[in-house]
Length: 180
Image (cartoon, rainbow, N blue to C red):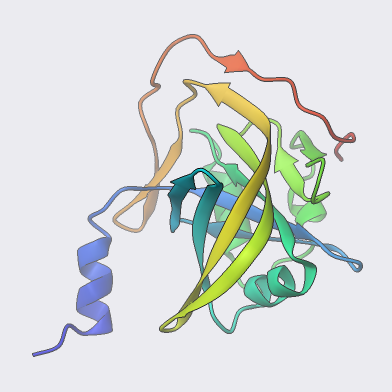
């Protein structure tokens, strides 16, 4: 008997996943969405994959623009993850009032200064995958890196702070313009 979508979702809710914010800067505005399906694909060349709803606006604008920023959210940033996962959300810049951010050097996409890591990416290709698409992203820069910072996780339908990996964090200098 095939696995139902509900059974499949219930099973995968048991898997803790990191939480990221994908942003795209287009000619009109900044678009952002929360994603929990991010994986490392290749170190040489550096590639990551992100799962997006096939008929959703984030996949559409990413395909049109061809670049994005991807920020892995840190412990304590659950409210940001919730803001960007809501339907009918406003511009990314409006959702980030009072949150320090900057623009990634290549894509111009918003990356969060307080995230665990931010990647500046170029779309390599979209791969159809059922009701989703896998966006294969070539990583072109790492504008934010807080080595050892604790990530935000999603487990059983809730956001949870992971224990901090190390007490000391190291910030890597980044380039890009000032945020909002």
